Image (cartoon, rainbow, N blue to C red):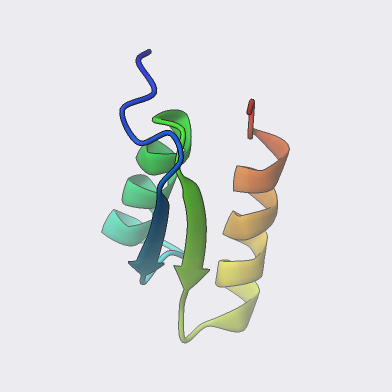
Length: 57
């Protein structure tokens, strides 16, 4: 997949689940550094850990 977002930083609200989670994953796949924000600390940290472990940069 092309790294269309390489060198960019994305702030994703609601990143612990649903659409925010999907957007965060897509942005990581596209090469962005992603900052997740979520009101549910547990789901936000869990998703951040998943994204960090799948980071191929």
